[in-house]
Image 1 (cartoon, helix red, strand yellow):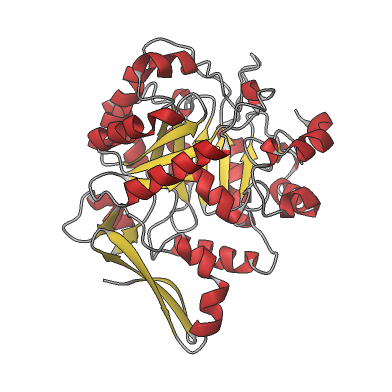
Image 2 (cartoon, rainbow, N blue to C red; image 1 turned 30 degrees about the vertical axis):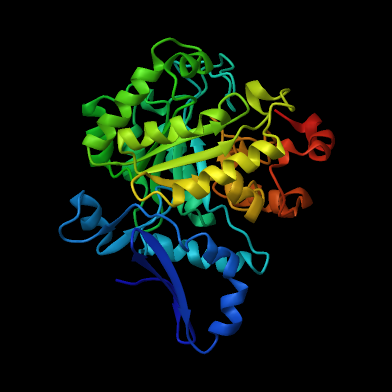
Length: 396
């Protein structure tokens, strides 16, 4: 079955599951012209693994009830087609004319966290900062009005936040998907089920290493690996879409095959990689990034995994950034536990605060978009020496 990605009387783009992968086709009078214009965007979907098709005999049924017959391509994206996906496509089309919207917004609802991750982008400042439920709801409203199609709750550790399910339920499923980023600590079977019942679309659980002792070392707490993997199993048992998130760095790039095997053994839906960013506790580790040779190693790994019909879908962050550029202030935005509005969770430069009023998000986004740094379709800004030198005096 073909699913429409974009459709008007003169141009249509469809995606079709075919032998375990996706096939993207275009047609219409304007296809020869517009097809070339959006070819890079469509390459993101073409010849890739996907998660599942929602149909009457699919599992879990609650997603079918919510979205109807559709294709779930990624845990980071609403089903195709759906009202949320249509909003995303319109936003992407407008970006081609330089009109960007904050499509993906992460909200750090609390600073509190049981972990002490060496690479944390939001190190605990011992201020015990958190946003109240009304403040977060107001932020959600503002973000959706500004164009957000994905609201991601993180922290700190969001599982310890009282009112989490209320916030998830507040996200209108016709406007945006509600997602969560967690270490897995506290993700019991009961909690996983309550998150699913509240309407959580997907849950991302971070793993630093397939080796228990190394994961615990990076997290700064013994026993965290077992809690994370238990949380993954509980989330899957509750019928949630589960994404495993790997911060890729020189210290774990040689464990790619073991990481993939762990993800395969756990039967997770998607395996996402992002290259480590010198920010937060890792701010001064500017040399701890992947070398060109390690990037080539990762590229080859991705090609092998895409050819494997058995393993999970991949979200290869380093390759996506190389292809589409840094998303900070172009597609991403972040809100801290103090309410500060940043271009992304890794760029610690505030452009406003959600407590400044009902238009705080849109006003902050205007300021971000006026800053020429966020118009560059290049690599991660925090790994850019020139950007750091020019902006470091504004870092929080």
